[in-house]
Amino acid sequence: AVLCGTLTGAVPVLAKDAEKYTNTDFAMDTVVSETLYTTGDDLNTEIGNKLREIESGLLSWTDEDSQISKLNAAAGETTEVSDELAGYLAKIEQLAGDSDGAFDPTLGKVIRLWNIDGEDPHVPEASELDALLKDVGYQKVTLDGNKVTLAKDTTLDLGAVGKGIGCGVISEFLKDQILNLGGSSVFAYGQKPDDSPWKVAVSDPRDTEGEYLGAITIEGGEFLSTSGDYEKYFMEDGKRYHHILDPKTGYPVWNGLTSVTIICDQGYLADGLSTACFVLGMDAAKPLLEKYDAEAVFVDEGKNVYVTSGLMDKFELMKDGYIVNEL
Ligand code: AMP
Ligand code: MG
Image 1 (cartoon, protein in one colour):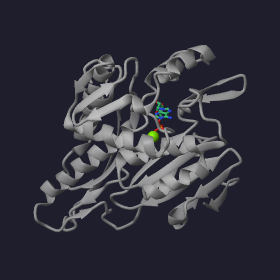
Image 2 (tube, rainbow, N blue to C red; image 1 turned 120 degrees about the vertical axis):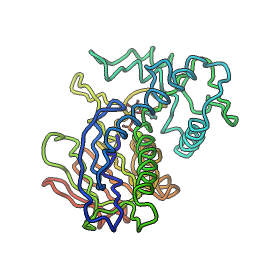
Image 3 (cartoon, rainbow, N blue to C red; image 1 turned 180 degrees about the vertical axis):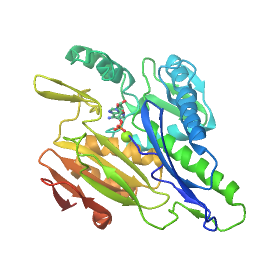
Image 4 (cartoon, protein in one colour; image 1 turned 180 degrees about the horizontal axis):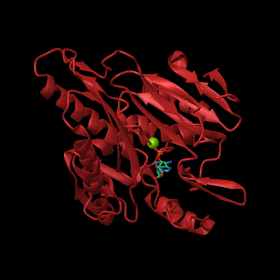
């Protein structure tokens, strides 16, 4: 999941009357919280509408009219998609390859089988999982410009990057919006009126209702995304069945990690990398982080927090019992 809004606030510097607006909304199956500094226009409604538009037009697997739904329905055949979706799919396939398939956009049917958002989530039969795994694999997506071919029976699910895509779109919108507002006057992007830094809270994976684990300072233009085993899960026989799946087995990833937070310069990438790095584990994630010039915070079950060197002085521990280590 990604925090929207906390990552881009903007204000024309000359405007003395910039005010802080906060809002929460519901879109893309999640709570959207926004903190904006503007001179007045109500951007909140428009942001909510834009996110819902991305969901229903592009990414949703339940809404039959979304492009992803249409692609899935046409698996086995070639479908033409919008430039926008073609662009995302190309980047997503690249990330899938770069992460050696740890991030895999074709887990659709396996994700539906676990149905972790459903009424009564339970552990599926191993044989059911095995049967579906044969249709999983990012290589089963063929891209040729705007023409996309899914192998027969393969189903896309872009849940691991959807919120990041949403953040990217909104940040572009805010840029435009500020340009319109500010006209030719001095224009600052991603800075609060009083120059204080943006701080984003990081949840304690084992105490999500309690105090935050820590806070990360980010700069204007940066995106932050967290993947955690506490976001969607159920317990059965003392085991935590959560929503981040290992594409090789179809089962949740149990590697000792409880959350991974990524900071980088693009929305889809922060989101995709958080999922990928959770699956890969810390050691295997390192080269991927370097390749994409991303910073990360890993939290494990032993209450260790591992922070990449570029983030060490931007991460602030707020909770007792955890130990911070440089990665
Ligand atoms: P995130 O919270 O960004 O890590 O996204 C997790 C969501 O992505 C899950 O709820 C699934 O819909 C989907 N997903 C789970 N495991 C994977 C994976 N290994 N690769 C891609 N998508 C996944
Ligand atoms: Mg993700």
